[in-house]
Length: 242
Image 1: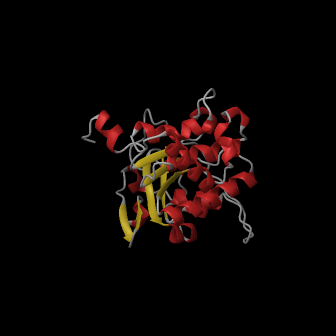
Image 2: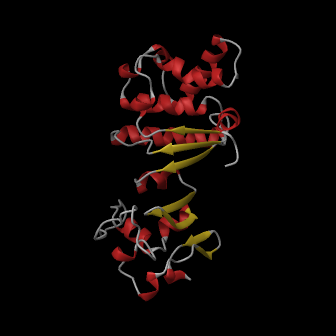
Image 3: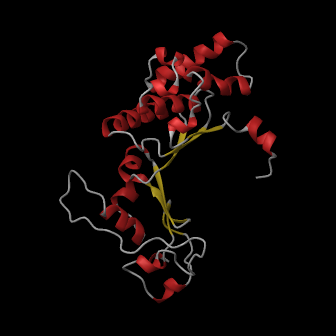
């Protein structure tokens, strides 16, 4: 990017794009009340003229993520894990950015709390018309929210597709193995696993990075395949589809 750090901070960070980190407790200052932390981006970017105006916007953000307004005046350690996660999501949304990155937003939470937060995100995405980029290892979580899916392996993008086709018919061997390892409620299947381990990225292998673990490996895999469009909107980085 050609932007200098200060220009990026003023024009982009938390105004056009925001982020929800994986660990909400580590994202919040333990000695500052939650409401004040959620309001901070509003003051940093001069979006409000008074504390009362800021509090009103923070209350709206809390309503949107399903947190009672009483929690504004509490410290992070007084909140449950789910409430902290919702508070961090409120912080990301309070300035109404166009794009929000969600880094494992439901990790370390119980199943019921995960479901509630995912439902809140789906509702928010619809209401605010905001774009979410969800970074996760939990395929079932991504299937709940994603309209498009991108699969990465060892630092490389190996498949990009709309969610409907990806979850129904993945094409890359890694994607297939990934989906085959996940139990489903409506299908009786034998679960699979991927033998071996990912490569050391300090010394990445030549050619396809999944080749050493791939059941479909053949001679061409010694060279790195291109990421090519095999169907409209569906790209795959594999010699089997070139």
